[in-house]
Length: 248
Image (cartoon, rainbow, N blue to C red; front, side, top):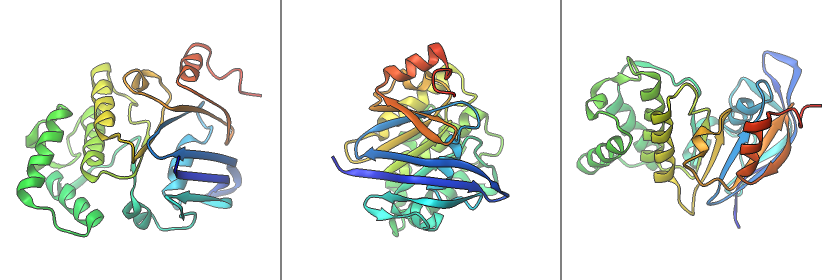
C-alpha cells in the first residue's frame, strides 16, 4: 500500500528553548486510505509532531526526515505543504475579525486549486456540508469564528476540511472541549471526508471521537517516541488503564 506520510527518526527542539528536545527519533508511516490515531499523556509531544509536520517555526528539526506523497517536506514552507494537500485543524481555532467565513472559504479553495470556484456550485457545496455538520448557513456571513461557540469553531474546521479535500488531514484534539453530540458531528464529518485515496491522523486524549470511526491503527506517544502501536483495541486499553504501562 502506498505510503502517504513517512517520518524517519524525527528529532525536534523548541525554538525558544533549544536545550529542550521534544521529539526523540520518532518514526511513523501512514498509508493512503487509513485512519491513524496518536494518544499520549500531556507533554509527550503529540501537538509538537503535528506542528512539525506543518513546518511551524516554533519547532526546529535537528535530525530526521518527513516525506509526504513521496516528496521530502522536511524543510518545506507551510504554505507549500498545504498546497501539496496537507490540512491541519487546531486545538484552539483562531478568530479573524473583519473576514467573513464565506470570503475565507472561497479564498482558501482558490489558493488550493488555483482556480476561482464557481459561485453557484461552491455555494451549494457549502450549504450541503454545513447541513451535514448541523451548522446554520447564516454563519457564512459572520466574521471568521468571531462569536462562535467552541463547538461551532471545531465544526468550522471540519467544514474547511470537507471543502478543501486534502490528501492528509491532521486533526489536533478536534474533540477537545466538545459535548457528546458535537463529537458525533465531528466524527460524521470525518466519515464524509474519508476515502481510499486520503488519510487522517487524529491526535486525541479521549476515545469518544473514535467510537463512531473505523480506525486502522493507534499509536502511543510517550516522551517524544512512539512506544506502542496496535489496532483500535489499544485505545480501549488505554482508556481503561491509562499510560502507566508505557511510562518508565
